[in-house]
Image (cartoon, rainbow, N blue to C red):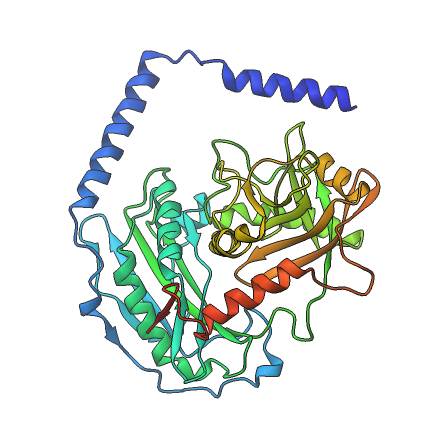
Length: 415
């Protein structure tokens, strides 16, 4: 069965590599479409951009009481208002509006429903010890949002202008942010294609909206290390694809493998890629592996490189930067390189494994206790009575200190 699978895979790859001979009619049609697409993109660049000075605010007439912080469940409860900005190919970005939280009204033929013209971001607002509100590295979210939208033929947006009006939404609904440490206001900027058509092409209209949800600590009673299942029977992303973009279309296909892993007692999938079984990322997080290098004995913190198959995580970049600044001088080697799952298992067997953790906006870091791989459990450096390693704990504390304004850092943007 395995040989049959490998044969099919080789045939598929060969088919992709072989240039197809197209008829002159198909070539002409393709060139016409490309010219039209290029022209529309060029025209779009000349259209009005997002103008924060034109923001209008309509306050709700039925404000609700904030939920008790102990009852908050991630993504289930939303604030009173939302931000909404329309875009059209004819007029560019329209005036932004903050309006009461409400349903969207879309035609059944709207292109987002049929061809997945949708991308989003995940970011947070924090309340510091003085009651001030802060965003964490919003410029990185804006950069990634534009990379995602451009990849699926949606418009890009002025990141500074969008950050400014998001700040106005947060200030308006700031009473929903609990004061306690570990709590924040989760922000979900989302862009969708809204053109009413069943034709496949770049959307002539789009909607950018932002909703906000108060959230509590990912681990309310302290760290709880997770178990992963190394997954090689399904592929999350591939070279030349869109695995490095934050598209909704990247998430739905991962749910079934996650359910299968959960049925076997694992919290998340660890996605492996290729016959080499390279470690890529975990569920909705980037992965970090701390071990002692086999050849040199040097401590090394490893994460997969940005080769187009993993998400450019904001927390990933933060961990790398802080590690280079604060662990590098202590003798650590900080690496962005490919590592095979077999190397991870070998490090564990030889006693060279130090710790493993995921990194993402929701949890900051998520310690890993073990990984199921080829019928065996790979232990990831934690003692039986430990729920987190030293590096994961340090990273959480370092990043939270910046997020909540305890440590002065340009990453923390007061609004």
